Image 1: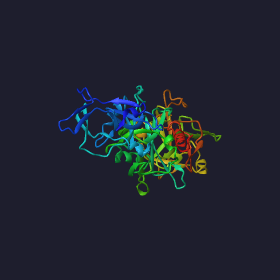
Image 2: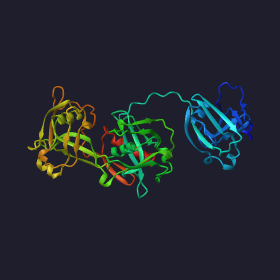
Image 3: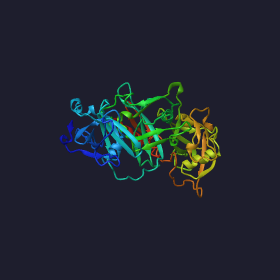
Image 4: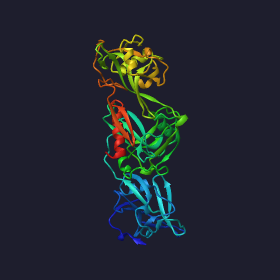
Length: 467
């Protein structure tokens, strides 16, 4: 047997059986010996401690478990650590000839109750030994509770036919983007572990991207992509135990753990979303203003009245479009919601643009302005744009474009703007764009801090290119 004295100084812990003063007690059948293990982690020098080959000292003998495995959280805690983080085959880190020198010294475990476990070595039992490499979590100072999550976005990271990392495909490794404040000052991102993920959770990821659901899901180990070798350095796991019930309508209805996990890179979640005939296009409003042109041809988008002009984004494809809003389905409730979203308190009035009072028909036709929103419907209790529905396809003419007069306080024509829940007014022109490269695809986006599109672009570029 390999003796403990041969081992260099390594982390030690003891699991004791209650009421037994010595390390050994022979049973009546004389083949079963009760033992009291001390656990050690033998680090190979290439992994961050506390980690290493799990060894068990029984008296002066040093070896490993066989037949039955212990509770590895108990093992880590016996060595003074917090809990088990990860476990894998030790042959990845040591030569087999070296590891196989360690014999089995415990092969029988009896859990008496939730607080008491007994360990035995029975000479009549023969099993293959367990040679395992453990990572334990060291005791750390309690950290303040994380900020409450405001929004969760998902991106799908994959590799296209040209070998470029991309986010424009219907499948990929799931990246969660966690937003904790409305100004997008506190944004974190990372991968999602596949622990506890169910079909409804995979569907929720796909639906958030505009698809009808997930055809299947798995992890990186079973669905490898040819990512750069340093991708695991760029993306750390941020979400674990992600699960959604059948009744869940959004990610907010699902359960998950943030910032704590016991997963390796190979357990990162991969989903395959339904596309083609099964795909659904979900659009979101990312910008809005009240547009008017004066007699000198000057464009204004910072007032309290005008032609409603918006930019919308396809959540599945990332496509953006900008234009006017048709009055089909529009109501007083819709007008109030839009005015509040623009930073005002309420709508004074609304009507269509049949008189072209805010922009000449010739100008609209010359610039080929599109109608991008139709059938806007906001319930009376709607608090924000998210509570409303609309369609991207339309059957309208520009004489049906929505115009609004908004007010707040004393109905000052140009009141100061305030933060809005969804899209905010801006004096910047609508054609102010940023170009973002996702792999080989260049996508042009409106700069819109309220929805964090520029922030997400920065995150994706860091993941893809490391800067």
